[in-house]
Length: 394
Image (tube, rainbow, N blue to C red):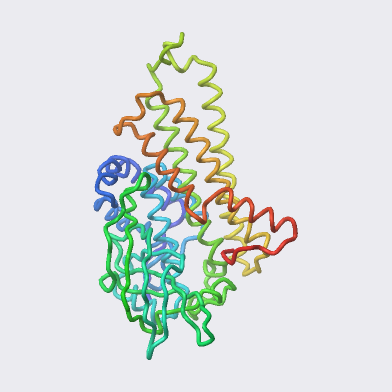
């Protein structure tokens, strides 16, 4: 059992804020390399930010979700790709904590700084064999793969009756094929490459069924009564990632105002953009959207933390609210960043101007299946109308 002192929320916020200049400085180079900057990852490890969802017994912090929102906002202020990747590592760390305790020992027992990449989509097929499963498939969007040591994958396990059961499994990165195919328009620095398995054997103890997870039937005995694990998987994931989106909005605001002094509006009578009523309307509207996004982010975090602390049961409406809160913040961010982009003028399309990267990163975030505003709004409205949800991801 590790006895490392756990930093308080204010200290983690300070550490994240102090990293913003480094993250911003390395963002253009990381985008060019199509992966996270090594020095940034080292700094994230050194500050303990990547241990915020690792169990305390391995030297982690088991941070609450309001702390994740605080830190995520600062990371998003630095760079969208960094905020996105760290949120992914937080989510996978939390999910590893659902696996049987000996598996957690295998992952973290010798190094609490081990990182796990992966996705929830079951895009592989598995068959049962003696002692485990054989997996075949291809998994895309493995953010942070270059700096991860383990891969979390999902697949459909064929059943004796000819059906299929979605499962989740853990495999060392060295045992799976990595495909360098991350040539994309946004979130380039996440390095979200694909991975391929060809008759890959995975021991049975590293395999768990997804259906029980959705019902909060977790395999870990030691984590069962820890507050952060008294939560459904999707609300926990949504609260882990929502902060970085609000932070990316602030990143756009700061990038816009940094270039504002001395800029005019071409082909208009305004030699100083700050004097234009249009600019006043734009920055005010965007600022209000940032405020609204922060409200949704912190309300979700507080809901998750309160219900975790009390071990309370989640209603279907509350589960759907977690999805729609994420979608609403993404919609507000998309709109606010679009306002700053429109107000930035033609010179902002140069790669040296951060707003163009922020816009592309936000477009990519909004297209993520669990983030998509339209999908999440429809799901929430369906539940509010008294209908059964049409998705198991709640």
